[in-house]
Length: 236
Image (cartoon, rainbow, N blue to C red; front, top):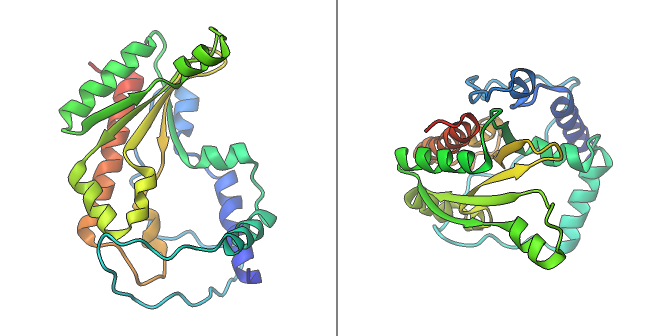
C-alpha cells in the first residue's frame, strides 16, 4: 500500500478512536441519542498534508451483477497494510461499526422486543424473522446462565432490491438486523451495524450512488434507529 494511503488510514482511525462516539450521550445520561444532523460532506481536515492517489474513472454498471472477485492475496495485502497502521483493538473496531442503545431501567427484555416490533409496524418496516442464538447455546452447552441474545430482522423490500441492483454483494448485509443482548450486568442493549451512506459524500470517487438511492438508504438507517430507540425507551 502506498505510504500516503497508510498515513490517511492512520489519521482516520486515530480520529475515530479519540472522537465522540455516536452513542456517547447514552453513556452519560442513559437516554438514547438522535442521529447526527451535521452535513458529512464537510470533511474534517486531516492533521497533515496528504496527496491522495487518483480514483477510478466514472464507470457504467449493469444492474444486479456481481463485481469481479478480489484475490485472497490482494485482500490479505490490503488488510495487513491497514492493520500495520491501525491503533485500534479488535473490540474498538467492532464498536466503531455499531450503533448501540442501552434500554431504560425497569424494562424487561420482552418489553424491548415488543416495543421494537410495534415501532417497525408503525413505520411500515417489515419484520421478517428472529434468531434466538442463546437458546442454541443453552441446548448445546447446557449453561442455563448464558446471557440472552437474539437477532431481529427487518426489511424494506423495494429499497433492498434497489441497492442490490447497484451492488449485489450488499446481500451479505441483508436483511437489516437488530441485536438485543444482555451484558455481564444483566443490562439490555439494542445494537445494529452502522452503515451510513453519507460517509460516501466525502469520497472523490466519481462512481456515486443515485440521489434516490442515497435518500432511501438514509431513510432505512433512520427507520432502524427509530426502532432501536423505541425499544430502548419502551415506547408502546
